[in-house]
Structure formats: structure tokens, C-alpha cells
Amino acid sequence: MRDRILRFLLILCAALAASGGFARADFLADARNRVAHGEHESAIPYFEKHLQAAPPSAAAYFEFGQALAKVGKEAEAALAFRRTLILDPRFAPAETALRDANAQLGLTSPSRNWHNAVTSRIPLDDLAIGGAAAFWLGVFLFLAGLIAAKSRRALLSASLFLIVCGFAALVVLWLVDPREADSRDAMILSTAGAVLYKTPSEDPSQKITSLGQGSVVKILSKRGRWGHGELPGGQRGWFLLEGTTPVIPAA
Image 1 (cartoon, rainbow, N blue to C red):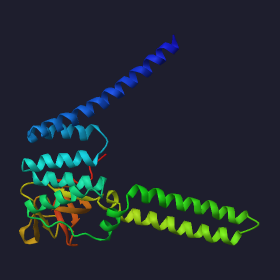
Image 2 (image 1 turned 90 degrees about the vertical axis):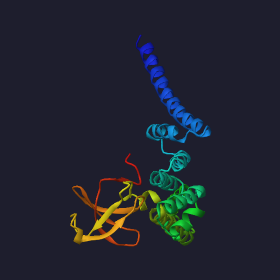
Image 3 (image 1 turned 180 degrees about the vertical axis):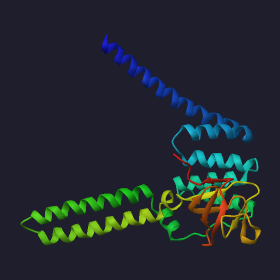
Image 4 (image 1 turned 90 degrees about the horizontal axis):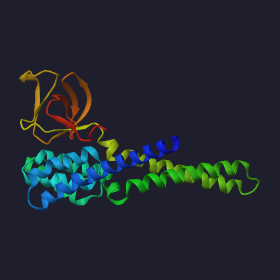
């Protein structure tokens, strides 16, 4: 009797998991079907449901961004394209689409830097796996060199070389990985934009500059309704957090 109950529970769990997978697939299929028929507005809720229920996908975010751009929601589209590039920095169509969305918003896209040069040439997963493999192989050879009677110097030299290379690769990964670099970024989605102040106060005399819809600010700290942030050019100030959303969505 106990075995039957256990088998029933296992089958039930498998069925529930499968039904969840089918539901996610149905959301994305419905969204794509609506896009294929030119129904971009009605496709948007289905993309949202898919992205809420399924693991993050660069392709799904890109298609979501395209649908948003088609109905004139340029700031939301820019956010979707940024999320695409966080998941896959080598997704060239998303980079082009982000530039177009920023142009529609009257914003300048950030210039390419050495981070982009690395991520456009080396897949981040390969960098992580290669760096970790080199580091731990170096550690293994170092331990082997300590106990080896012969070729000790060669083993120790090779091990130190691998450890240094592996560690360097992991440091580069940490520096260029958008999931780390953009972890504190927020985008202003309010159509009214935002204002950057010298102090957390709406005193007009403390105004530094206005931020348009679609602007990205790196949040350094928070104080109630206020965020202390840094603009891409390095300028810092306070702004109201209402109307902003994290570039990397909360898990």
C-alpha cells in the first residue's frame, strides 16, 4: 500500500511539473502567434506571463522588446533589450535594437569599452569554465609537485602558471560580467522622467539635471523614497525612486 501511495505521489509531481512546463510553452507560443498576426499589443501580456513563469531567456526578452517597440513603448523596450544583453552579451541584434530605442527616447547609447570587447569575443560561460579548470588543475599540479620526487621544479612552475592564468580569467569574468556590472542599475520608466538633486529634497535650487525616460542610473544607496545614484558620466545626486525599475529583475 505504501509503495502504491509513493508511486502515485511521484506521478502526480511529474504531472504537475510537466503541466507547468506546458503552460510556460503555451504563453510563449501564444505571444509569438499574436506577433505573427501583427497583434503586438495583445502579445505583450503573454510575454510577461512567460518571463514571470520561465527561467530568463535572452531570446524571449528580445522578442518582448520588439513587441514593446512596435506599440511605441520605447523605454520598456530598451529595458527588455538591456536584459537580453545581460543574459547574452553577444546578442548583436539586441545591441542594435537598444541603440534604436535610445535614439527614439533622445538618449545616447553608452560607447563600447574593453568590457564589450571581451564579452563580444569570449562567451562568459567558456571564460568561467576555462578559468576554473585552469585554476584547479594548477592547484592539483602544485600539490603533486610538493610530493613528487622527480620533476618537482617543472610541476611547480606549470602549476603556478595555471593558477595565475585561471585566477586572472576569473577576475576578468567578474569585471566584465553584466550580471555583476549592472547589478545596481535602474532605469527610469516614468514618462515624466526624473530630476537629479544635490540633496534628497525637491528643492528647485538643489536641482542638478533632468533625466529623461529610459535613462539608466547606478543606485549607490537608498534613503526612504530617495536613491543616491551615479549617471554614466560619473555625475552623482539624489532622485526619487518612484517610476524606476531595476535593470536586473529581482529573483
